[in-house]
Image (cartoon, rainbow, N blue to C red; front, side, top):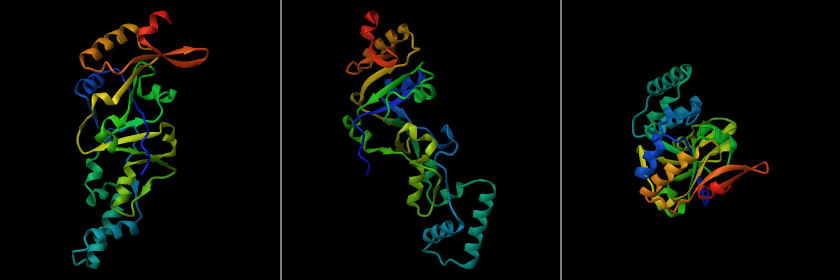
Length: 241
């Protein structure tokens, strides 16, 4: 069990989805096929591991030699097609699970570029301990040099929470659910930070929007460059900056 971080962050574009998220106080959770990494939530297995799982899954049946031969054929056909979807035979939750991604790093230049439209979006800061269900359903992503091999049914969940080492800079945590939306307590949002390229007029409008939605407890900042480093400046102080 990993210790949950005090704060987690969500980078987001300034778009309708962000407005819906804050208006309804609900995270949208993506399906496997919507993720930006085609290797995400993928896994692999050997024929031996596959057959072991098959036997465990159907232990109540009188398994005959032809049953195992048919299972082997199914495995090899899918292997040639480059598909691992046969795993869903054992655990449908692998295809049903949805995720929303967060990070421990609230000021990562690459993530500002990739997920906040090159500093034209926002980074939302959350304090999970203010929302018990939110904190409980957060899971840390592990990083590996290879895809997870499915040897036990429990490995299917592990494959959902494992990504290749290339992505470890993201320090990701995932919210897991089988539902499309996940409600959060507004108090859990504790800070809103705009990127370098967001116009002041946009932030002023957003400030009024925030007041109408009862997020006044969450201050609004914008990133600014000072002395060759990025700092956060409260938008109330931008006129004097």
